[in-house]
Image: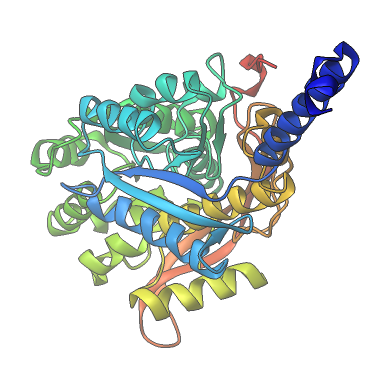
Length: 402
């Protein structure tokens, strides 16, 4: 009887159909929900920029902790790697994270030189990259990519806000200084876009430079009444100490983006930071529930006030969490995952924002001043908005591939 059934062509066809249907159902079930989310967190964890990468890592890990060790309801594995501030080392490590570790997302890069080096291989693998810092103009404009999302800013934006602030405060002559790498060039371009006075000195320095004696002499001779710097991490710490030590703060007002007046710089420099104006899309005193929880728990877990980098790392994880939850863990459906990322359905520590067509945020930018708080700590205080729902200058150049 068994052999007779299987020798019948109609029965064989029916059995094959049932087998195929069962196999497809199993495949569909597997695709619908991954068993975990793997994130490659590639960041600068050694050298002069190490503090920035450490803060991104710590902010990201706090968000995962807040979600019970999960991203989108799935167990999270965060693979942390040091890019050594080297494009070549970063490319090799990114390749390993994608091919060997098979990560679902990547994040963590601090510097735009590294981001531009690792971007194309990541995008080619169809791995979503969620930026917790670097926002190069290339990826905002002609080289925009469906697999790149900035959870932070576009490189020019904070600098544009400072340019407007310096103008609004009536300064007429500015000396401006940044490292000679893509974000440095974006920075000064952004400042000049909104500064209406005269730039009497424009200088780019090596990314590794820590002695600014020659630049300070040029500033003194320039006749500037305002100085604008973009010098992240250890660069800014050294410059500000030397700027104040040379007595230039008596005749010139110092301005910077949030990075150059951030909590890591304040901690290292101390009193000479008082009175410095800086701009950012976030401040630890912004009054929203997500930010209050983030700031309180960051201080509790790490014993320090969070920086911009920590806030951006936290939001990068929160964006992933919202998107994975939205697609119910189906990480293979790239189109649905992209749409979920674009929707950004989470409460950001910066307050309300949304993504532009180039996957960079449309958001507010604030003026901050370094002062002493009620506890006597030297820290930032948010003064008010410089820009509301600000867009970057490159979005029109982006023809986002479908």
